[in-house]
Length: 365
Image (tube, rainbow, N blue to C red; front, side, top):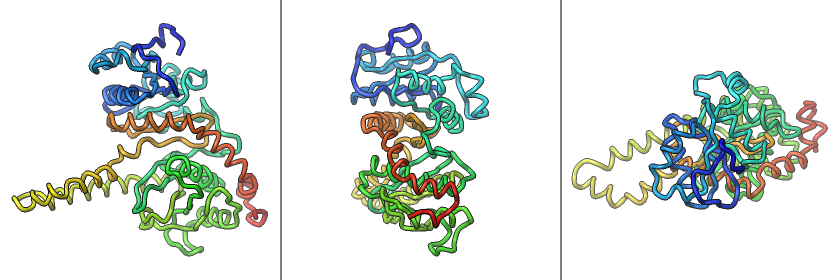
């Protein structure tokens, strides 16, 4: 980072590797979790640029022993975008807000990825206005990871696009497959389309059109297996599930709420009375593992795929652990060239993209 007054280092550690620009004033409880998460990640070797009110960030950093020696710098931003703000209007009217400044640092070459636990609509607007879309991408998508019986699966879109066209779902499938390969190590991901049944005639005009396109291929980067119902999301038979942003966001919130409910039921069932407490003690390792899998903080962040730069969304109540995990994922995404991987995959599926845009399934394959 240049040693200018607006972006001087708060600590002495130069560090190496990717620089993550973190919106320190995006989350519900900012800037405490953001700063603590940055400290956690920096102690593991990450470089972090905290973006926001300098005086407040310096005070927060001072609470952490040894922070002065960590590769953490501060870039001052005088404004904030709140959850109540109109996303596009706020991004355009507040150029010095902490969130858009993170994106500016990336486009100016002073950071390698942007991250925020703030307004997701504003993050999407920043991605579109600041980064622009990858050539050939009609709409970006937000992807997240969810636990299954046999590992993890990628779900997208989970909120960027309420209304979609078949081309969008086809592009989500290609991008989601790349992400599953990057994040979960899937060599040839199995991709399914979320619907209300597994028969070809199920779904809506949107899902039926996308299903026909994906069935005809070619899908060299992944295996399209067809429709999947909601009760099959966590079976472990799929690596990627594709849907529109409205349905995906509802599915994600239902999954998170169900996980919390199961955890509460288990706590109530195994506690109370000496015998139950003893049983709870014996089962504690299994419960700890289950709690980790059910905790949204363990998923890290949700990348915005389809734009010409790396952007990561954390949920508003993200803990310091979630922020730290997200920073590590962002650094890995830089090192493993996630965006170029997506660009190359879209180019390899040019015939599929062309057919989807034209609405002519017969031209595919």
